[in-house]
Image (cartoon, rainbow, N blue to C red; front, side):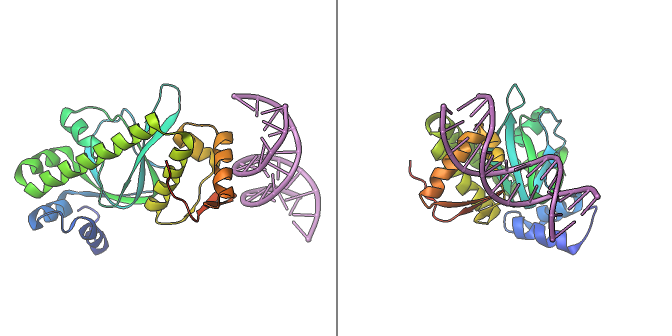
Length: 221
DNA sequence: ACATTAATTGTGT
DNA sequence: ACACAATTAATGT
């Protein structure tokens, strides 16, 4: 690893230590490029060439898709132990990224060059299984997103969005504005404000300026 | 500490 | 969806 130190190694081990066999883990240490990114950075943007695969060892990445206009829609989060699974296929085919990955919470990752990625697919069973497993998970998440887009009303989507945020941030207090939620869900701020108010009146959340506290939120469809 | 401004949220039509 | 009021945070003096 280029920026060598024990802390990174330990973090990496915490996330992937029992996923990968020893030799592979050592290779990751040797070859991987450590990168820190701050909130708001783009880890990957739509149209970017994929040259590396990130293994996320800390923080949260928000993946989204952009429509024709300028609007974005939230797809799913990546957290520690995850990797940008969709980029695998893009890498192999030398395609450009379909998604945008924005750093939601200060993150750290280790970048693996594509050629190593392909090599390890053949040489390491644990790598192969890891990739397939993560790809599978992404697919499930995407199907869930599609389901909710197609069949759920906005209030249900909002509730599940809040629960999602809570889970990924490991915090019941969300620092987020109504406008940001509206952008993610492809709705308008006013509508989100109203739905949030209803949730507050039901006693499921507590609203504050730039923050939402989740008290008793349940998903009832 | 106070006044001004900007950003965020609430509500009626 | 739009308009505007109300509230709160940020900044300057």
